[in-house]
Image (spheres, rainbow, N blue to C red):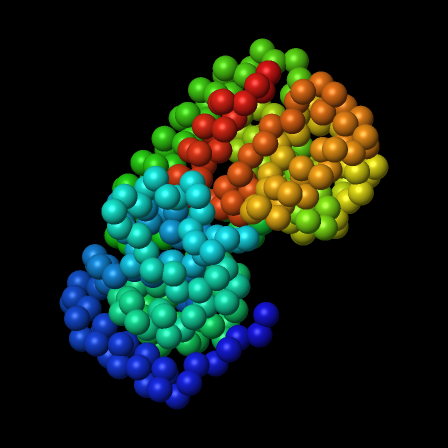
Length: 311
């Protein structure tokens, strides 16, 4: 999506905000190595804007309530799993996943901005005029990218210990659940996002796929996802039958996906899928399973796995 350049008045306002932030940044400000080189960040940021779901998740896990955030994919607010962690406070919405409202960001007067690893350079240049903007050095689409990125966000927030503790808790709980499932005979799973245009098989390199692997369930995309992709093209129900996993974790993002899935369930082709016949379909929240990442998301996914009738 192309970047909408802000009005001249917005740029002036951004410069004023940047100047104000520089004036109040403490002398003990730290240098942080990011995807855009070394930048100076405040020791204890007080007004943090997150422009990436993993950054919002990590900030909350570290005990920091951002003043601004973007919507979740397929929604008009933060992800449903985040809601319990907000209490009476909640960040202002400053854009959607792929389109940031620069004026809204300026209006929140941030002293630190946490962005995603795929932030376009043009947006970075604008955001960095508003406040120090941290784009993490990410390994890309890998199951453990959330940990690498999360630790960098923790460093930016000055909350490394809190983030490390949250990640350690996830790993300890994952190990316990893997041991619990260790005697199971069925050891394979598939993850599918159901969209109005058809089901999408999700990559085995995604965050949630990595969580399934971590508890001992082998995840395969059955050759339906291109190398480097995050999901397959929309599939027919006949092609969906190519999935051979013992369990199918089935995700929808919103009501449109729910409606499409409900219609598919009425079809004989869906009913004939082996996982359906065997009662091994596990409905999950697509906002969590196919869009989110971070320590809180990991805990919520482990909740789902623990509650599911997984062998």
